[in-house]
Image 1 (cartoon, helix red, strand yellow):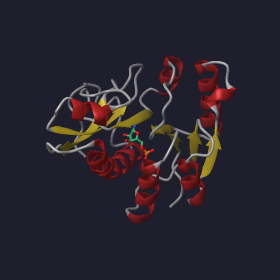
Image 2: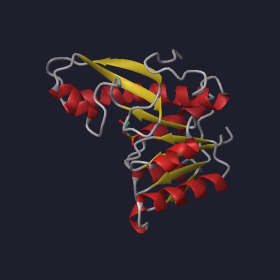
Image 3: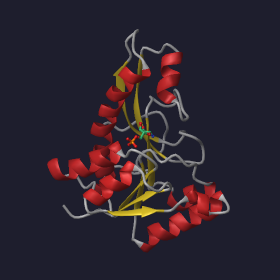
Length: 206
Ligand code: GRF
């Protein structure tokens, strides 16, 4: 399967990246990225990209004097490769308003909760702490806020009373790995767009 004009941005394990690479092979989805970019060297996601024959690029944020300088280097690298879609998959850096403006409607993220519930870096822990009976997964366009952009798709995951982070996280990740490749494929095919659904709160059913 040839690569799509996608960049997947990662900072760590890259299991969602792996799900995209696998779905391209097993389901014929258009989810093979042209490039995988990590802001941290040496992470597992880079190994996964290399193993799949995808360019694995490190843009180490510690080498840039400011967030804006890092984002400009990232933007330049993406444009140089003809990227049209930017897919955040465990990318643990806030992107500047400038970058979001450059890529609005072509920049998506996956988050382990049913947004707008439990935004931020500890969504699974926060859902457990709140004694929620249900959480889930959200895919959304990125805007200037933290996990606030227009929703594209959501899927629920039930929480049982004796769940811990260790028991709940794998069930959430399994749903992520099913949902994200389908959404990314739909974006590449043009069946989902920001223009097509710019009202918050009514996620598109895939
Ligand atoms: C996922 O849980 C995703 O929802 C969140 O970061 C995690 C990334 O995991 N944004 P991985 O690197 O894809 O394994």
